[in-house]
Amino acid sequence: MSTNVVTVHNVVNINIAVSCATMCADRPYHHGDLREQLLESAERALRDHGVEQLSLRRLAKELGVTHNAPSRHFRDKQALLDALALAGFRRLGDTFHKAVAAADIDFEDRFRVLARAYLDFALQNSALLTVMFARKHSQTAGAAMDEAVARAFAVPVTLTAEAQARGEVAEGDPLRIGWTVAIAMQGLASFVASGLVVPGDFDDLLDETVTRLMQGLRRRDAP
Image (tube, rainbow, N blue to C red):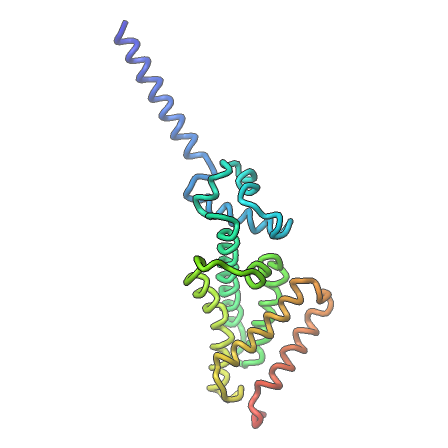
């Protein structure tokens, strides 16, 4: 009798263990991928409802996890916004590098392609762009944020230095000139992202911006 009871007890325990293992394996939001799921959901919420409506508790409810589960990855809303901004700058850097890699060597052509890529990024990620540039980031964002920003905006600086070496652009600190180019692109992208520029004017305004800026950047003795 006792042997049968022990046997049944062991079988039940084994079944419970197997069921638990199966359920845990099927759960879509375990700790290993919850951070990425939170970022993806946060970006959708940001795009659909704006930054003011974004909250960790709402994201937890949407993902079907406990309300305190997101805090294991993001201390608070600011930490989540910092992570979104970091992801945005990394994506922007990838966009810039890919754009210039496919462009002609001429500085004006490469600048135009780069500006077009930035404009498209702004159109597709207007809410994210606001988080990236229009909000303060905590000090804990630190080195990773600095590195992502530097990588993205190293592209116009490098283009400037290369154009100077070919005699296309006037002499001067390539870092300052490159940042002038970046500021012009950011200003245009901000206007686009905020809806101040109507879609039909995008191309004309882009061409005008590039042409005017190139007039100031070219060497006076350049053909």
